[in-house]
Length: 183
Ligand SMILES: CC(C)(COP(=O)(O)OP(=O)(O)OC[C@H]1O[C@@H](n2cnc3c(N)ncnc32)[C@H](O)[C@@H]1OP(=O)(O)O)[C@@H](O)C(=O)NCCC(=O)NCCS
Image (cartoon, rainbow, N blue to C red):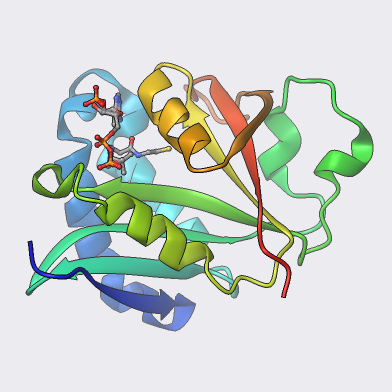
């Protein structure tokens, strides 16, 4: 692999990026989509459109030469974020109190198979979260994917508790948090 070229985007480029993000998703989740309607491209496209319309949306895409190898995106949680609505764990109210500037939600991270175990995923993750002004980040990992959960733990994320989004067919997730360096 050549050195990974990581490019940064925001909501102003979301229309232009959309086909690439959907193509990579369709490839990465092809197997999962055969049995899990929640992994279908249509549902993903709806989610992507919702996220990428947010003014604070940011995205990084990794390129190896002219090939997109994967990407990550997210956005800050607004006050009263529905994100926490499906939290099943009992936590003090202030843990899930959002201000609009407190928490960056890492919504998606995916890497095409030929670039797995090359460090590309970690680089995309780090590039997306580098220089964020928020105090912490959050993500959801499917409880049926314990190895991905362990991977995030090895990257410093801690598990807050169980969460099932209030979306029909949504799986059970681990909600995770990561403190971001304060500048
Ligand atoms: C998650 C991801 C970006 C990590 O890439 P990476 O750092 O190169 O790490 P790997 O691909 O080796 O993944 C680590 C382990 O998790 C497993 N894993 C990864 N994604 C998985 C998934 N969706 N379902 C089940 N297991 C998965 C891998 O098989 C691997 O297990 P192994 O060590 O026994 O081979 C990449 O695996 C990926 O794109 N997965 C599909 C999309 C995904 O699940 N994203 C995370 C959403 S929270």
